[in-house]
Amino acid sequence: MSTRGSLWERLPAGAPVLAQAEWALRRRVQLEWLEAVQQAAARAPAGQGLEAALEVVQEALAAEAALVVLLNPTTGFLEWQAASGVSARCLQQPLRVSEGILGWVTRTGRATRVDRLGTHPRAERLRPRAQSLLAVPLEVADPARGVLAVLADRECAFGPEEQSWLELCADAMARLIRQAWALEREQQRARMFQTLAELSPRVHAAESLEDALGTVTREAGRLMQARLCSLLLLDSTGQWLDLRAAWGAGPAYRNKPRLSVEESFVGVVVRRGRPMQIANVQTSSRYQHTAVARQEGLVALLSVPLIWGGHCAGVLNVYKDHVHVFSDLEVSVLRAFADLSAQALDRARWHERLLEVEEELRRNERLAALGLLAAEVAHEVRNPLTVIQMLYHSLNLQFPPHDPRAEDAAVLGRKIEQLNRIVDRILDLTRTGQPQFASVPINPLLEELARLVRHKLRQHRIELVWEPDPRQPRVWGDAGQLEQVFLNLVLNATQAMRQGGVLRLRTHARGKDVDVVVQDTGPGLSPEQRRLAFRSWLPSTRPGGTGLGLAIVGRIVEAHQGRVRAEAPKSGGTRIRVTLPAAPPAEGGSAGASSDPCTVSG
Image 1 (tube, one colour):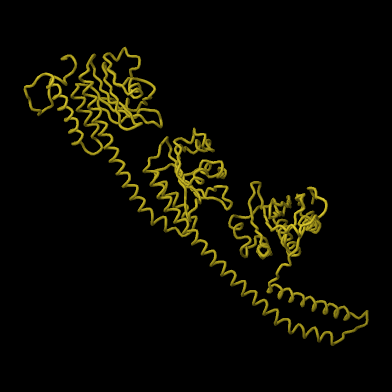
Image 2 (cartoon, one colour):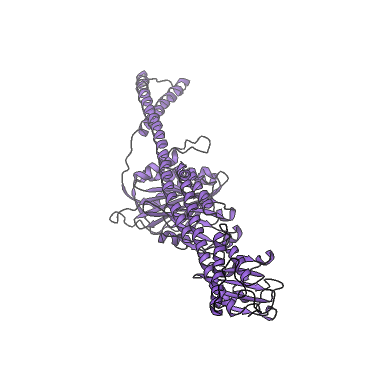
């Protein structure tokens, strides 16, 4: 026994000496040293209890080094928790659970003693002069298993008694680690919820939706100490998620394609309405854009749903730059922040909508005032104009054919008639023209329109591509007003393609609706212009334009109980999609033979 260290030869300093039997003395020595380990951990400053306990273990077993490592189940590596007598260089080397003596003890959960490390095939180079090793498993919590080990610079330094006592120490160490983890979790919980309370006023202070989106992603990234934080919202169809804000993102992430709700990982989060995570998106088959993740340095992902109004409207994502399994605390904190953010976003959206409505009301008031003024002016002009016309006719200005005054009198008569027509048109604008509904075959209407504008298209070097639906769809509407709609759209597209281009006209029947698409290859509309195009007086970007054309289109389509929206195709330009109600079956008879797709070169 005397050749195996000093544990059984002496008591800790200050321990009382009692004359007892040898077996009782051994047990007493074990308990006294175990109490010394526990007291050292209790007296140590916060966060240093494990190191203090290891120093006592090292002293008790007359060892030159002691260490504690724990398995990280996510990475498959043993991570250093504490060490005494081990070089800093050694602490930096990775320990694989599939290799070495420490890995074997972790995998099997069985203690091991090595009397001669130099001849052992699995021996790690933990200490250059080490000759003996004793390692026992550390059962902290499933699956958090680790190893408590001691090293001595002499051979055969540890025996069964030392192993038995070190196993008792392992139980105490495991409790110490669990207590430290619990304390750390509570401290982390307190910090995160304190931060959450501090963030609430900042998030709710944002007035516009864009400001709120940026604030949410920025503060969520700081709260979770993330590499990147992004926020995606559902589009109007509910089938796609669009990136609306990203904190810490580079060009690769910002320019990645929109995500399908049916096919993407975050789409599953939307459909299930609960948080989900991936420990490493760079190797996961569930993540679609692994190349982007590698380029941006993104690894772990936690995605939580944004719920407002009882429905999931999008997701909030946080990424770490290393493999990480988000704890229940982290998930609950981010989910609480997402709920807070959803309320702030909903508030900002309604505030923004309120400002839009106020601005639209102001525009409508100005337009109404302008219309009333125009009607009043036209009415006042008509009275003297009528007198002038009556006096002109009463003068009976008849001159010989070769008299120059004959032509002047004729011009004067024509101009009076022209002024009358102008006044009539101004007065017509102040009246609400209700559409006269009937079943309208849409393909012939557009073909006639194409014939009307073919010379203008040719002059502007524009190629017309006509793609009619062969089913000859009919819509329920006013043919004259619909012709005005599509003429406006075609002329707008023509003016957008000053250097020539391609104009596409397409019809498509789907269920109770019929789509008419007008697409050009011009410079396109800005997002703001697309958003306001058919709702208000859109400022015109061309010389001499009033901006009323698209507003008139929106008004007529709305009167037909249809929908119109401006889209930005990936190929460039602008796509206007007009959706009109199909004619009732009783009204929609056959319109004749099918029209084949054709191309008209301009």
